Image (cartoon, rainbow, N blue to C red; front, side, top):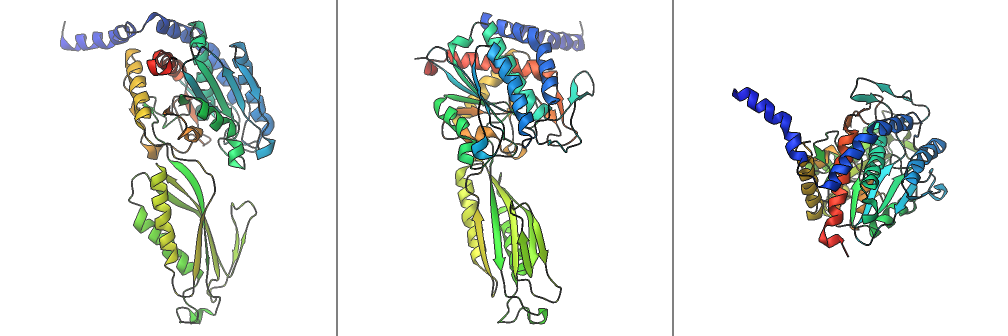
Length: 437
């Protein structure tokens, strides 16, 4: 036998060698996922063909009812909460109380970015492995993987060995306000749990999971200057005007902070001139001015993303110092939105979960798993577990591409892969001494 034949044989046999490392319960998990994978694909197809744009409350609730029914069948106590207090559809919360021991929080969301006026409303099969559909990767595929994993744990007789709470929010893509009410079920569950697992798409690569996510907060810059005839700009009395001062500030933000790893800050829109009219929801507005009049006012709205609270506070201090060093005859004020998504910092506990998950993946024959670069993953609901649990990872959902666009796809061949890895991870965690009372 030549070398090429030997390599080919080893590749073919590697899943068999890996599978032999699983115990009897884990083999039952694998068999259950294989048995129910076709049903899971049917459930996913049904879910993505229900419009659940965040502001389509009826559609969000319909998806919640769809998943509630599946979790009811598995013995979970389920409820659909009201979102009236924070202006959204509400959430799906499901709980299964097992023996004293591991307490798991599993996180998904029901809503998508595709509202009723989007041209992207239904699913198509690109080929045998790829589905093009609104929310297939972000994140109805992840929701279905949670349900498929729960089915496997039940079939293997393991659900009663752990306590699980599932929170599928109805406003992940456009959070309700106030945030403390919008995320209350999530944070309450995090305070209860030992471990939090998020089933977002991550960076679209099934070889990665998220051990750190950057937080996200909004900021507003307001600048005023002296309105005057443009012939008097730069004089001691008139100064530079609001637009020059705004340009200075934004340029200094870039010069002083743009090189810091994992920190980004983006001015989303700018209005400036003699008068500025900001829309009530602060998503834009209008400005009036003349080329021969020095600008009196500007408003800039943007966001800032940091990988830790310490990095965020350092950046805020630098930005405030820049804003205070005004050009002549101008004033500036920088404010940051209350709330926002907190950062999920990289912790030893999160890295330990990655280590366990990687080992399981290799034993299943699915290959190594690596951490996602925080720059490649946006803010997500898992961040609200920060400071409440010792171990948290995200990105356990369905891999795909082009999230948030009309070209969003999901790799449906990975439904079973992800469910097997997640279910076995939960089982192994439940056997660890630190989680057994």
